[in-house]
Amino acid sequence: MSFTVAIVGRPNVGKSTFFNRMLETRKAIVDDESGVTRDRQYGVADWCGKNFNVIDTGGFVPDTADVFETEIRKQVRIAIDEADALIFMTDAATGITDLDDSMADLLRRTTKPVFLVVNKVDNGDRLLEATEFYSLGFDRVFFISSMSGSGTGELLDAITELI
Ligand code: GDP
Ligand code: MG
Image (cartoon, rainbow, N blue to C red):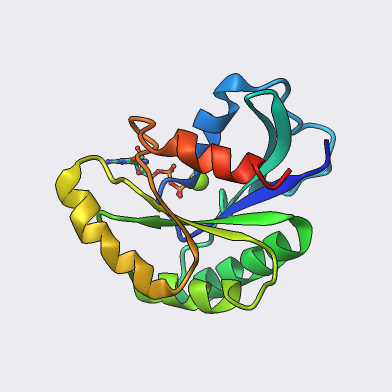
């Protein structure tokens, strides 16, 4: 089991909520021994008998504006290097922000598969609004609610198809 998926995205879009939900069916959490920095969490997801590593990024983000953006860029670059596929998480409640745009620019440059995940699609109105995220130009777009779990199964199906 060596396939690794990293979750990137600006703060508060719901990365950790989704990460924790994925690990509900976990076989193991491998945090203690991997020499991890404290801004990343590592886990193992199990979906329909297929296991893969998951990295949740951005647990620790300094709060000055400049450092903030630099730090997020750094994390995206590390994630692209480290992972076999990326989850680029965004937030339907806020819509596309400038930081989403700059992260999208970085992520469009990788040849690795990127899943654009629009989170917080909790209801039908949100789904209509969320279609603006197609404009970011990714082929794989998923609308989910990490809170309710809606849409997460299709996303996990699509990820495990790559394994
Ligand atoms: P992170 O900074 O990207 O890791 O985001 P968190 O997972 O810490 O979530 C940030 C906030 O968004 C928390 O208050 C979550 O409860 C909330 N949140 C996460 N997923 C959803 C969702 O699907 N719908 C709604 N309405 N809120 C969510
Ligand atoms: Mg988090």
